[in-house]
Length: 490
Ligand code: SIN
Image 1: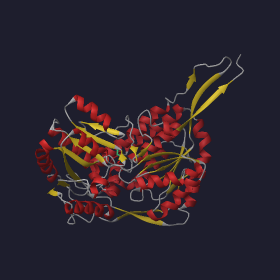
Image 2: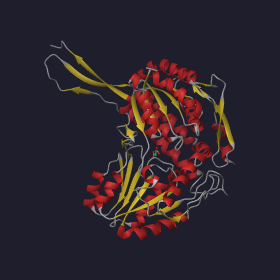
Image 3: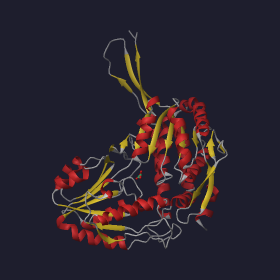
Image 4: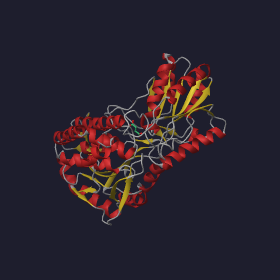
């Protein structure tokens, strides 16, 4: 069976507003394509501000009843949604691979990963505590209670079309908020399938509303939410320039924001590291989703004494990777999301080579497979004057930088406006303590390349944004604290 046949029962191409599938009010549609072949998968509703407004109206109507539900009732709905996601794991994985391009095994992994946030926040819904504040004056009771913040607008990226929206919708619903959302134009189908399953799980009409829009229409559609004072929170995963735009444009109504933005993760290999473990950790971190992951290492710093050995081992492993479409079970890396992404990768590699990098493997477009494929690449002798040092490549390119001292590595690692993830490998306990404190990042991997978990706080510092997703902290962004002061008690 083709990916499309497996995914077909879950494909929806309209907006989901107030519990119903509806076309965009303008009647416009845009084409969603398979990045492996360029073929059209579906023509999807191309929404504008009227559709965004209709979604907010529905979310506003549904809010009083949803927030009044018992936390255990909201949890039960989320648990049913979680079960339905897992029951549809194969079809969802096929849909993810079809519209996003990642190998099917990774698609399945993403379904399990996204579902884990739903189960996590279902449980967290029942643990939203307040405080009774120790008494300061006789006759007065002071307490703090947590309340849902209100309507949440969730704007999500294409690289994890299921997991990123699940980890925004689940805490919002758990907290008692209602949601309006817009997935990325490259991959709206997985998100639309997910809301169909939420509907089947019993999420009431109006509680969860999703609109799709093309790149051209998205700005105007989202602008409606930014200016609407009923929308109390924006949660966004995507680029830093768009995050800054959302922060600026929503300032007029002072919304709460969670921004999970770009990264430029350093990966440091000290000469006391277990080299095999470091190579494997780097591959796990770097090649997930073909390097199209915000927490992917973008700059790999290797200490002088082990540089040549590390580079040779890495080159051999990377050169053996299988690139191909998701339909081929042997594929380890699929196509990039679109031609713009491949052009950026090619530009970074060309710029690095022009500035003194050496090509250890890869370094070319794989046009024999299709326009969106790029060979996994290792570059030696990278330096700070190369574009790939300052910008996120978002592709399967590993540049190796040489360093001498620990301080040089830490300084170079921190020499970026971004601070999402950082990694390092060392077997020295004192160094581990020092370096994990010195790295300016929201997430630090120590002798480990796979960091993400529903139980851990995910988010960055500096221009990688603010707010945390997942973990016991992840609900805070969807709640506001109300202080109650009761007098006359004596
Ligand atoms: C991302 O790339 O933004 C998310 C990756 C993850 O959740 O691990």
